[in-house]
Length: 153
Image (tube, rainbow, N blue to C red):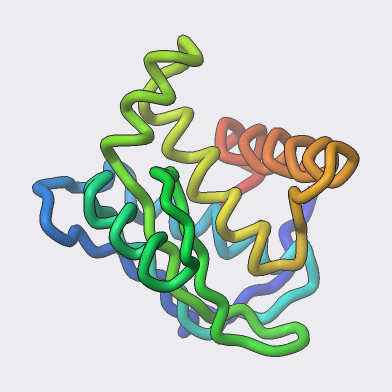
């Protein structure tokens, strides 16, 4: 299976804010995310992942979205039409708790949440049960590509 072309100059950045965290296999994950974007016929310019704590994401959720809840991810799109650009804030604390509760590995849950944010930028939604089902299917398909190295290079 051939991978659609993606711009090598497009940037995906990972930052830790207020926590000590380093993403394993950053290059592989970057290539994977770029390929998922390209396969969805979108153009990536810049995507920033800010990996942070529960408390920081809670503060952002309350301040910018007026949601008084903890969450694992908040996506801020900064793009139009077929261009992907944005900031995705991820709670590493919440990912750890969710992985434990769901009985999956931390890496699996982290990858699911990262691609969930990307899929939101691509145009997927999860506000209804049917849309959630479509989102989950897209997440599962993307995660399979990450597991199969020949499909992400």
